[in-house]
Image (cartoon, rainbow, N blue to C red):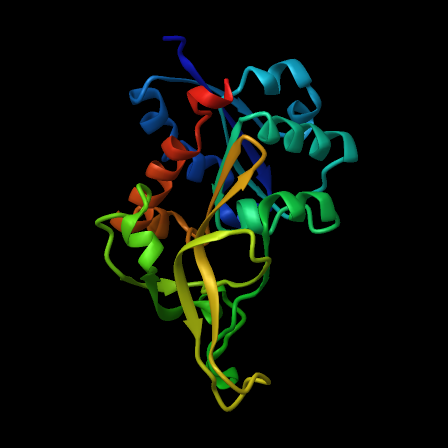
Amino acid sequence: MAQRRALVVRGGWEGHQPVKATELFIPFLEDNGYAVRVEESTEVYADAAEMAATDLVVQCMTMSQITAAEVAGLSAAVIAGTGFTGWHGGIVDSFRASSDYLHLVGGQFATHPGKEPCGRHGEPEDNFLPHTVHVTDLGREHPITTGVGDFDLVTEQYWVLHDDLIDVLAVTTHPTQEWHPWHRPVTSPAIWTRQWGAGRVVVTTPGHSLDVLEHPSVRTVIERGMVWATRTASAS
């Protein structure tokens, strides 16, 4: 069987440490038989031949810009069977100006609610809240999350805008607080998959910092998600 090929695309906002974050997972890919190529920009997405030969794209590119040709190339590759995955802002806070990219991923970061205003000091920790990631009934049966119980984190809790063409494996609920403008708890998808043509998309929203990525449940989900998203034989 031909060696599987993984493309790691990283960059964008440095606050998410795209190099160190992706370096956590490259050994896992290599140990599982992937040939790994690393790119520091999205230009490779416009290379049709390279994308056609890629079985999995792992993206960590927060904010940043993407050209129409690049997002079209990425989307075409996924439709043809290339897997696409990532975590946190590296996949759901990428390329804010591209509606075509949003359409591919199926969800977009809107905000991460913070602490009570008097407890904020202008630091990233202002937005670190204790919260629980609850695995859904679907998630309890899915290869990515089976055996992973609900887990607690103290980090950014993503509020995500999304469509209903996603299969939600885990959720998190934002409570109401007296300083918030919303009036009832809001549940956001925290982990989801999306079938796009012959390709599979996997999004894991926890992952703001290296310690979160090293949390056993988060790391398990990301690693399983990479394997699950990889091009299947039927898409070859």
